[in-house]
Image (tube, rainbow, N blue to C red; front, top):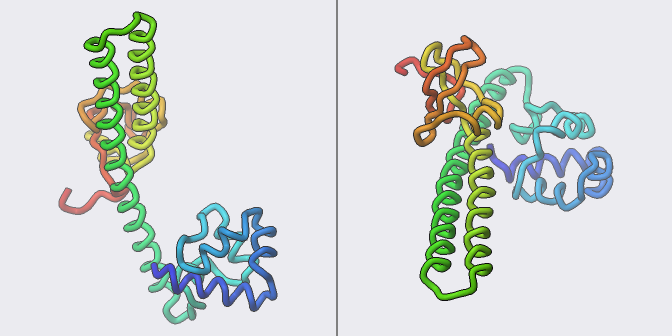
Length: 208
């Protein structure tokens, strides 16, 4: 999707409705700064307010994502391209999140080791020693909880029995035995437990 084109389109339609950025923002319950970011191509409207935004601008979601009013002749073609692009962008965002998960794990582990090493090797009072270890352990637990949340929401898990791909609950991911990003969980589709791999796409390709 061309964010610059979409931003200009939003600005054009807003002006046609004789609204300022502030007025549009107030109707959507957001800040005028967010509207400004849309119109300059720095970000896209959140999916949760797209329908309301389109209603205010007198356009369809397909028009919005295309950055132009789509004629009926090529409506389906434009809609298909927009859906494909939306899926592609989600997969890229999920890939970046999973990379962030690895970085969080490495940094938090290094911090825990450094705190434990400092407490063990540097002469200090016992209460300071326990404090350092405690700080290291607490930050590690918090970081791991955040990393698990990323793993839960980024991409999908694939059942090895029926091939169903889904996003499990945080509790399911947190409590499941695992090897890396492969977790032993119950599939909501077939009800069987299996070692389920993390995948980025919700669709199973023909050669898989």
